[in-house]
Image (cartoon, rainbow, N blue to C red; front, side, top):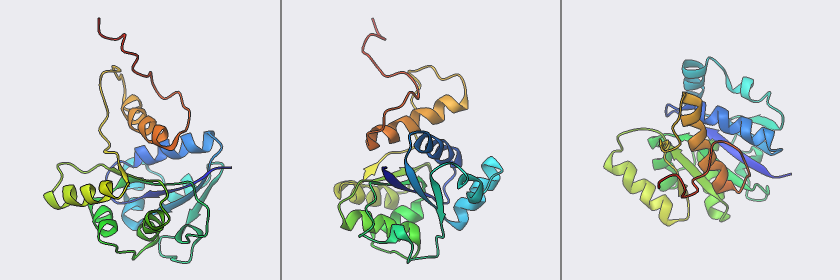
Length: 190
């Protein structure tokens, strides 16, 4: 069974993470969920839920962000993908400078050192120059930087359509088949 680490940090956009976790769970993936203190605040503020609520999804296990001895902190744990969604500018900056002071940043640095797929989903806007420089650094190291920027060519009719557009891009990067919206065929413009 494939396994992923999904981390939720302090950037707004908890709905992206919630939808991603549901999609991974529905696809039969095991997920190690890590939520920062600020991520927990946003889960409550934006969705009226907790990390513990999300860990009730099938296949989802909650790891403590303060536990640097957790499974996702080890390179010997065979984890297929690492996703930070949403990724705050602070978390991106810590990873880009090699700071692993919590389980989220430690897991990301494990992904880098083990050459495993890492996806960061920044949601903050606008970006400060330092965030752009740090995202460029991560991209140069093979990290997929996938901003939470939904498209509109699929004519979204609700917030879920906008969220699904971004989650679909994440799942595509992970090689997971899904039906979150229509794919561009080239026939849309005549």
